[in-house]
Length: 91
Image (tube, rainbow, N blue to C red; front, side, top):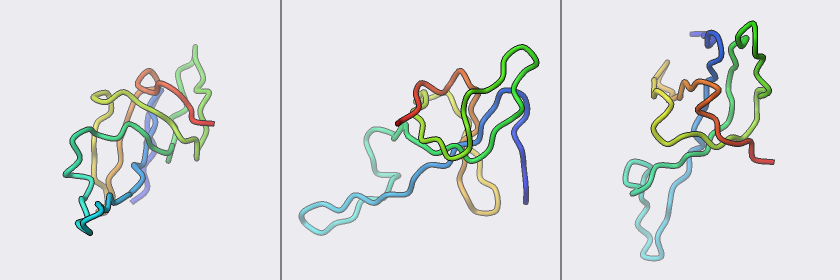
């Protein structure tokens, strides 16, 4: 399924990573104490007439911990966030 965010919203993918401890136990993302706040821009809305988005597809970003909405489409997890939920671009 194809989709595009509306207005000043962006779609973010969360990077997959497993944390392997020295004992050999692998902890999935769901076992993390603190949620990761990094992601990669997957799709962008067109922005508002007054304000265009300064982000581009593929940018690695840091976002607010509880700002974005989590969704699942075709078995893949995404976050939909407003541009104000993006705190920084990682260079």
